[in-house]
Amino acid sequence: MKTLNHTRAVQAALIAAVIGCANTAALADIRDYRFELVDQTIKAGADKVITVRLINHKTGKAVPGAVIFATRLDMAPDAMKEMVTKVTPVPDAEPGIYRFQATFSMAGRWQLTLGAKIQGETGTLENKLVVTAQP
Ligand SMILES: [Cu+2]
Image (cartoon, rainbow, N blue to C red; front, top):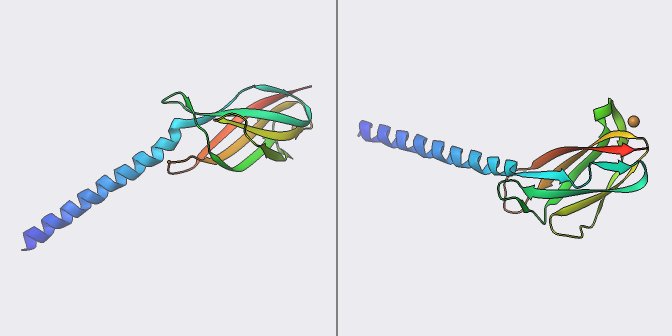
C-alpha cells in the first residue's frame, strides 16, 4: 500500500510538472507578437500621429483587436527619461494598425512603451519602440 501511495505521489508530481510546462508554453506565445513602427520618423510638433502595426512574427499576420492598456512616451533614448508626453489612442482604421496621438515638443529620439492584451493569448505584451522626431 505504501508503495502504491508513493507511485501516486510521483504521478501527481509528474502531472503537475506537465501542467507547469503547458503554462510556460502559453506564456511564451505572447512573445510571438510584436508592435512595429510603420514610420521610424515623425515631425516634431503638436498633435502628431504615430502608427504602429501589431504582428504575429511566426505567421507574419496582422493582429486586430488588441487591448492597449499602458502607454508611455518619453525621451529615455536621449537620456531625458523625465521628459514625458501624453499619448492618446486614435481609433484604428485598418485591422492590426494602432494609432496614437502625441505632442513631440523636442526633436530627438522618443521611446513609446506599449502594454497590450491579445485576444486568445495569456500574458501581457510589452513593447518599446523608438521613434525619431525630426526638427
Ligand atoms: Cu527632450
